[in-house]
Image (cartoon, rainbow, N blue to C red; front, side, top):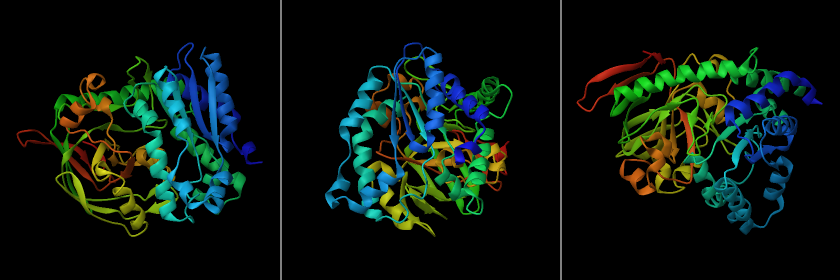
Length: 412
């Protein structure tokens, strides 16, 4: 059994980091967990540490790859325009009542690659619509939330197809543990130190008050205007409920909100994007007035174009993030087929929904105010990589003055 290929000591440390650093779960606070069935060993450790921390009720929802495929094989056609809205309404109610949220990532990234793309797109749209009330609580940082990953065998086989299942799982587990800093003697202390470094970067960017960033590299000449009153964040940050959490483990980025109407130029992806079972590679887009007006890809172009048609905000940016080319995830040389990891290997932009917390006083802004300041709204939020060791970035002040931010993929 491939679970035996996973170091139990490091797995428990990952669970402890998820509860103490990822969530900072509060005494009496309920916790909603979602996870692939294969990740049950990690979920059990998370549940144990949540109760040890004095947490309230822990409720886990598991998804099963075999059951997911059965839907595509046997369900009636109109089934793909529906989602379990009652479930997502319940989640939204739990978050409104103060529950924390933890997602364990690790699904097979290519699970739906052989399925009808239009059915996949319809199912995603229905799920996104149903999930929106719950997602808004998360993306608006009403609650403390976190994502960690488990080396699911089906995911491990995608990354290491040449290895036996046990060896693939072992190798992916080691990569997850290293990126999540649980291969250290004191992972909690390592995370506090890392958060402080990211905080120094975001503080400098906030002091500079750039009005735009200019990305220049092979196939990329892109000016990303920044939202009015934008604020940079990185690592740990405080949710509206007053709890400081680390939403993503791992994380190497500092990020903020672009202005939805002020993005101009061309951008090329530097790593493939794995989206709902499709690998989208060699993305090339052109922006005018903040909107993608041309898009192509050498692989997965039809899926990319479907994504851009999701809604009005899907072809505009909701996030821009800076990650050095020397980040541990980039240095691993692995393509994880998982945005949580791959986005932390390179600078990236995200199509779709912005984060309200990336505004000065964002907790007190209405959605209309966020829109007026340039924040984007959409059912989707999809990150893709435009950074590499060949990309330079300048910060552009309101008066046009330029300051080097990145040179050859590293902080300048």
